[in-house]
Image (cartoon, rainbow, N blue to C red; front, side, top):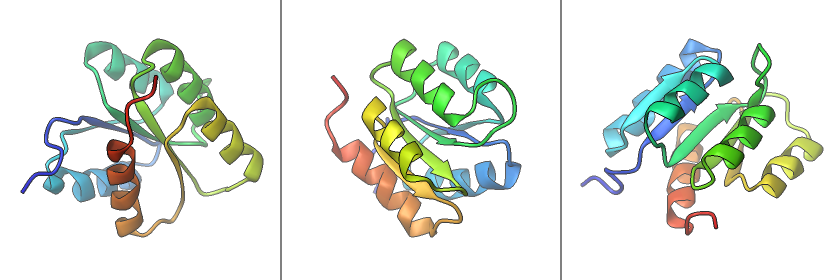
Length: 129
């Protein structure tokens, strides 16, 4: 049974192994998944098609790290939910993302079940206003 087959997910991480892992975990559950290697590529994907959820790494090269990407998404695509992933957790980063309207915060390395739990919890919440 596919719980949320119409909810599209974009995975953004500069590490191909993380993008691949997330895709392999979520696609079999019925989620259409796309990937992007950085913030600019993610925005280009979002401009081409709507995504219900963006799961992004915090620390990425270039001018759009996860926090800047999150702010851009909330401005340009306010109905898109966000989960932030980071290998370097900090309370101020978590607070900033949650204040901005992010759905959740995942600390890498994460248990696959935790990723799935976070995604399902985000989709169970009403869309942002």
